[in-house]
Length: 206
Image (cartoon, rainbow, N blue to C red):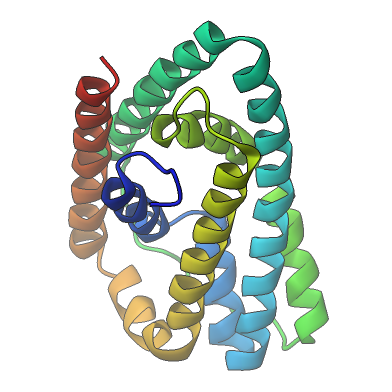
């Protein structure tokens, strides 16, 4: 669909990456817990804006590579497989401790937007992720339209998930985040899922 290889796996992988708690997720939950739904949505938009800039940069580079050097593009696909497995191993090795409570004062939605945007931009591994992730689901001759479709998918699913955290998941997430055993199980399952995806895609790219 949309000329995306392994479309089902592509959608599932986006959901899995959203489930892995990172700086952006923590920023969104923190903003919502301190100041309510509107401020949380401001943080969501800030995170998406930062991710979108990284996606544009990644897609621009990938489009050039696909047209100029198919062999290098194939190498990027194998790099993506290795990167997925590496991320999974890191999650399996990560120690999980109880989070501290946050008591910052209430700020405007624009301030939370800027904070989340800054968090996203100061995380340069995001562009590395997109450079490694997108080639896994592309054919060497794919058009720029396919890359744009992939960006739209990532942005839409990310927004739905993150808005869901703000609207209905915040109270549950705050309670579970204080229980190391639950967080540990979630991290381990996410790690194993990433490794499994990496191995599956490695077989598909042979």
